[in-house]
Length: 296
Image (tube, rainbow, N blue to C red; front, side, top):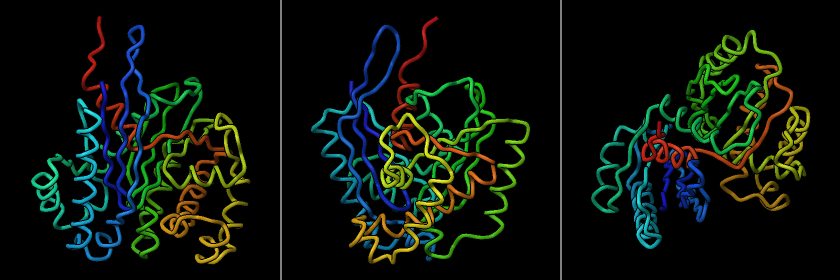
């Protein structure tokens, strides 16, 4: 059995193809193929509230390629989700209809809370101590999803219109930053020793740049702040040419760092775990939960 997950984000679109493994009643998955295409829908959506013809065509072509790969891999079920850029575009429904017609893919534009729940579902694949308290932080191009869970139970979850592309385009608002800080303070009050769990391409890249080797060990707030200052000392051009960052990563990694640092500082979190999971992992886990009904 093989599932596919498609994440149409504000910065990039991703396809994950995973084999589903059944072992003694437990269900897990193994990633076989992961593709990322930097379409950057957010550049249109956050500035013009409209996906341009060029971006729409790029997206459709990407979806056609994904559809062909899904057919070749003989995927048995899939789920495709679009997040904040498509939510805010006034022609989001038209673009999804075109994708359905030209690529044969049903693309769901998910609201922020559903996005947060899907991302939270990916924690099922993380080997963590469920007796501890965690703030799950996913930073995307257009939004940031926060989920607090304690003793393995989800306590609070919310999506905020703060993301890397939105910040680069100066479309972030002070009231949204304050709303996120208020959410963190209100929901973490009373919980001690909270750990962070960071997901998304930027935090994974930051972890690699930190020089840390063991993913089972967290990245400290102090080290993340030091890394932010180091990266910010380079121009965009030098982050690409000297540090070797991809062009579509070199600009967004700075605002991503700012969001993570703000969340950690507001919550009083001293370290953050960085498992290699994200929205696509949560989609696969959501498919597993849909297709496998627990017995008994």
